[in-house]
Length: 161
View 1 (cartoon, rainbow, N blue to C red):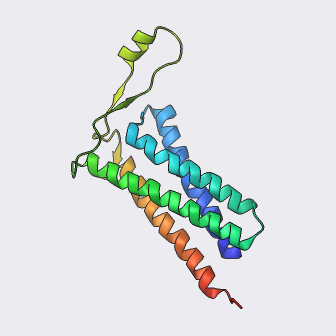
View 2 (tube, one colour):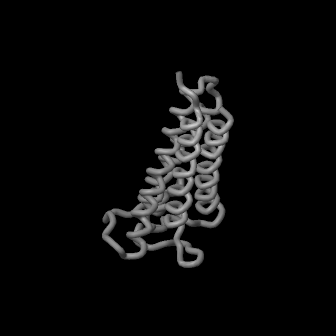
View 3 (cartoon, one colour):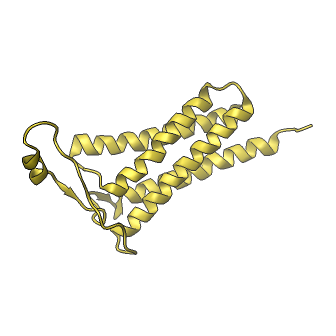
């Protein structure tokens, strides 16, 4: 049960850190998300909720099921991030719509006209040539694989009668 708990903690902390970093980038540094950035956030939120319930459950099989579901959500976010990074690097075509954030209140037309346009095919920030979507891909996919390997090791070591 100990490695299931460690896997659940990792399944909780990894998406919390990635989603928290995205929100800090958005609200602290003005890195507004495009539509594909938002797509990556939803599976992370689902993973946080699933991992939280896994940590609260006392049932070994229930906890393992929740952690597997959380790992799958993390993996899905990473794969969306990989697709998004490919769009940013011009490896393939992405979606054609863009997203924007509107300020609440005031004149709606002024808000629309002054809102920043966020393109999905342009990385707003990168480090060592890797965009935020690319880092989400790398961290989420490797984290999901690690979590699933921890669970597989736990299951392999279990003695079933």
